[in-house]
Image 1 (cartoon, rainbow, N blue to C red):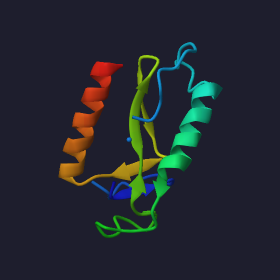
Image 2: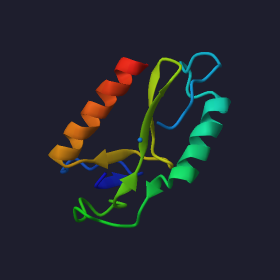
Image 3: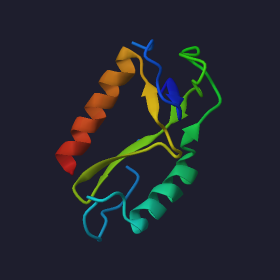
Length: 109
């Protein structure tokens, strides 16, 4: 993904990771057992910031490219960024690709 930030987006700005889980709902957030597995996957897969700007810098608060994974567990689709992320930006092609991945995972969830 080309851009990400932990800061609020200003007005002028117009990744299979988990086995099937065996615990209850994700309705009030991610249960600790899943969060631990997401954290492990993030480290193993090297998710998070890459310190690179392959699409240039979108804004002053842009922290650059971020690696992430998408999976499904317990009837939910989960995006694992490997860190806290408030916003992210995509090229049109990246947005289409992510949309397809989310749809496929939603069908499996």
